[in-house]
Length: 550
Ligand code: GLN
Image (tube, rainbow, N blue to C red):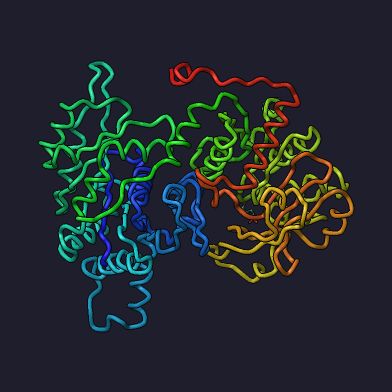
């Protein structure tokens, strides 16, 4: 059977949670037993976000097949619980690159290459390819940005064309907008939504569903107004108020009746939705009484999207252990200047996440030193593992000025060094060690106990690695290399012996954690943090929820 297509556009403003909304729609369809595939179309000209700063783009999410993609793919995987591939993130850069490479080969000899039809055809090919490859019942396609952006025009034109190419009843256009609230009159305003729909119509797309994001309750009058002005059925105007936790979003969308509306539109038969796992998770989020303080030490902490999957992984593990987490964002740049070091005292566990470049490194090393000396739980993710090894080299093994050759090319002790296969690489884009690789665990290590198995697959994104010249010195002096590549060459996990939980991994476990299946390393870290908190006799009760929301 040919898949049905949901095309999702954004209006009014960005950052209203379109990706999350799309992921939640995917979940309510999957809950009915349908096979769902999701794709994000990003109108920027970079081939992928791998070369962009987190300030520009937030987290780069890595797929199992090694694509560096938009962080919305993380929401898709976490909510729909299916691994996506590089086919799920198409950028204008990729589309133009493909078309221009064909042009150079002479594939269009004699022709003029134009946005319509050449660019739009390539966009349509990518959309249809995902449907074919995944054998999905429903393909959900989200376009980044908002209607009216110059660069998204070719994408919207491609979506418009697909309405006539597919049967009309096989497509559904969903427009996600925002209703601003005017404080002086305590009113929600629909005008920006009306304008945004007009903008879409100008491009030839009449939305079938409007999801109106808002921070306030929406009354029937507002719904009728949107329906009338935007020419959609009243039951297709879906108000979506900001949730107190994101796992409630699929439940909120289900309650609006959108799932059944989509099924009717597509004339699809499916069973009743099974969302019991999500009800449990959302319920646990609300009922957790104990609080846990976890610090994330990074250099982009003012932009939390940069650590999206880390933040979510902490929440998944904490919810399953009945904890309400207070994440403290600690700027490594400030620690480096000797500021805010006292804030480390108040943490129950410390995470140093991935990162690139030397800025803030000394602050991260200070955090690792603190965790080692105080025996506070520490989880190092990629760069966080490298930092843990550098700190150990300097302060325990007395390898003065030890560093990574990424930050200091002339260090006398490059305990972290460029990987062999990286040495000849000069291009920056898509050239790191990327995607899923196996890792063999040492029996009875903290890692093996956490995973409960001897071999795992984890996702990577790095150029540097632990330098094997130093392996023996570390191993003879308290560091257990408990995870190695199957050939034994690459260090994948390092853990300290004389410490309750200080573990660093060269991969990114945060990409595999799911709300219904927390990642074992995060679970072990959160468990160790609970024990550390309790040993110190810290009493952290969560304030009543109503107070929390005030
Ligand atoms: N910058 C380090 C490397 O390339 C770590 C990368 C990361 O944390 N993702 O090896």
